[in-house]
Image (cartoon, rainbow, N blue to C red; front, side, top):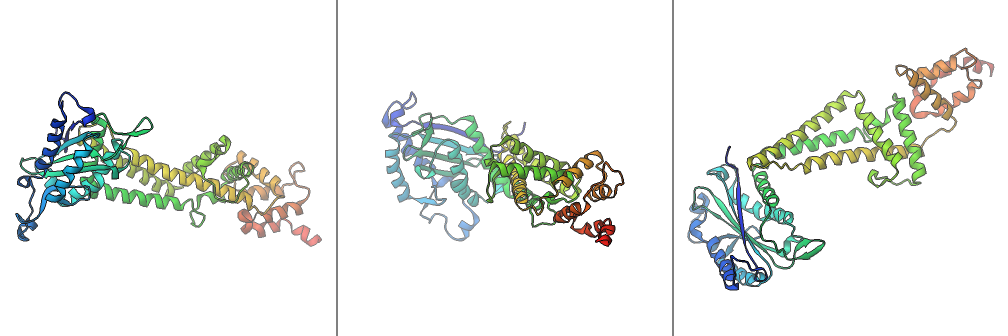
Length: 424
C-alpha cells in the first residue's frame, strides 16, 4: 500500500470548564496554550526561500514563523497580543491542535509553498471549520506554522472559539467534545489534496463540464435554432406540450415565469418529466453526443475525487459537485419545458382546429412513419364518405390558423380546394 499524500494527527487542550484527566488544573491548560505559540513561531524551523536569500531578508525580518487568519506572518507583538486573547478564550473554548504532514518532497514538488499557505489560511481552514460545525468563521481564531526540521514538511495548526459558535441540537454553544471525528479529518485531508491538484487536473475538467452545460442549455432556449421543444415534425411531443400547457393554465393563471420545483401538482410534475425523458430518447445525434460528453466529464471528475480519497486511504468519495451539476442542468431543462408549455398555451393562434389536431394525433399513433402534412392531405382528399369532411372550407381555415406548424404547406392545401375556388 502506498503512503497517504497527507497525514493529519490531532489532540486538544480542554477549556477551564472542560478539564479532563490529561489536564487536571487550569495552570496545565494555561501553560500548554502559551507554550504552543512559542513552539509554532520558532524561526529555526521556518522554511526559507531563494528570494529571501537574495533580498537579504533572512535574519532581518520582524515576521515570526506563524501565520494568522489573514494569510500574513505575525510579528512578535502580534503573537503577544494573541496570547492575551487566548487567556480569555481558554476559559470556555477547547484549543484544538493538529499536525499536517506530507511525504518527503511532495509539497515542494507540487505547489508554491507561500501560495499554498495563503490558500490554507483563507480557503481550506475556513471550509474545514464549517465542516466541524462552527457557524461563523469570524468568531474563530486560528494560527498555523510550517516546520522544516524533519524530512517530512509539516504544519502545526490550532484553533479556538472566540464566542459560542458551535451548532448543536439547534442551539449555538461552545463545542464541548474535543476529539475531531474521522469524517471531519477525512474532509480536511481531501480539501488539502484537492487544493494541491486542482489547477493541474480539476480546473480544466470543470471548465470543460461548464462548457458542456452551456451548450446543452442552447437546445432549450427559444432563441436558438436547435430549440428541441419546437420540433414541428414531432406530433407526440407537441401533444404532450399542449397538454402540459392546459394543466398549467388550470393550475395557475399567470404570465410570470414558472419554477418547476415550486409546482406541487403530481400530474404536471409527471408530464414534465415525461417530456424531458421523451426528448432525451429521441434520435438527435448532435444533442446526444454533447450530452454523452457531459456525462463523461462528470465521470472523470468523479474519478478525480475518487483518486483523492484513495490517496488518503479513504473509501468515501465526495460526489456533491457532480450531483449539483446534474441537478442544475435538470432543473434548467424542466423549467424550460414548463415555461414553454405555459407560453404556448397562452399564445395559440387558433381555436377551431382542436378537432383537426385530435384527428392528426390519432392517425399518427396508427402509423408513425407518416408526416402531419400527409395525414391532413389524405383525410381532406379521401373519397370515403365515412372519412370525408363535409365542410372543407372550415377545415381549410383551421389549417391556415395553425401558423407555426403548417404555414409553408398552405399553397399545397389550396390545390385540394381548387374546385371550391372556381365555384366561388
